[in-house]
Each structure stands twice: as C-alpha cells, then as structure tokens.
Image (cartoon, rainbow, N blue to C red):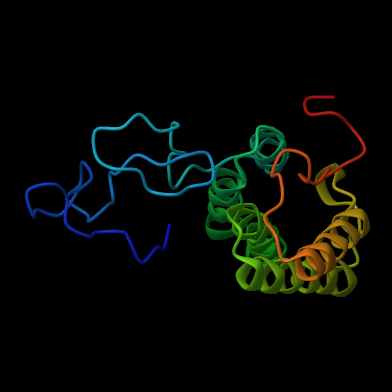
Length: 178
C-alpha cells in the first residue's frame, strides 16, 4: 500500500515496522481506511501482498465493498494488480482506482472521489476494449464503468459524501460466491 501516512512516527516517536523491518503504519483504521489514534479499536486490515486467484480477488473485493469497506477492497485489487499477469495490470489498477474513488466519495472528498472514479472508469473501459474481454472473471465491466461514471456525476453535482454501502458497485450479476 502506498500512503503518505505510511511509516510516520508511532507513539513514542519510533517508526512502525513489520516483521521484516519494513516501515508500515500500524495505526488502526476505520472501515473507510481513515487512521484512528493508537490504542483505538479499528477494523481488521487487509493483509498486503496476498496472491489470490482472480475469481477470489473479485469475490473478496465484492464482499468488502458490500460491507462498506472500499478502502480494503482497493487493497485486494492492488494485490491482484501487483501479482497478476502483465496483460491484466490495467484492469486491476483501474478497479483499485474505482475502490479508492468510492473511498474518497464516502469520506466527503468530492474532488478526489470524482477524479478517481473517472480515472478508474477510463482505465477499466480501455482495458476491456484493448484486450477484448468485457466480462473477465464474471465481472460486467460495462456495468462497472456505468456505475462509476454515474456516481462521479452524482458526487460532483451533490458535493456531498455518499454512503459506501448503498453505493457499492456490483462487479457481476451474480451474488458473491454465487
């Protein structure tokens, strides 16, 4: 995960480190990924660097989106982007951008939400056209692109935070696990 808060000083002025000594922000986070003060109970973080089958990435991200955790869904897509085949990186990067766009929109960051929703929609659409796979892993990319553009227009028009659960996309016509 790349974040400007990653690696900042923990309580006591020392940097948070993972088990391998790399700088990692260990502050708890809420469901939208916002850092909470040390010692508060946050939601469980997504482990980083997990290699999943593409279908499992889609199912896990959908479950997180449905639970109102688009920031965490972004981390699943980011893992797929970084570990998947080169020819699919544009797809997973675009989906990660959409999840971050929803995160910003739910936090009330209108400008960031609109930009990332539109950027992600463009990336997903371009990937589907160039590669010629409009339904990879059961995802309806045209439907996802439509969702993102409609949400971006709404966020821009209303200039207000959106409900992440109510506005979560359906990546496919199927229910998760279905």
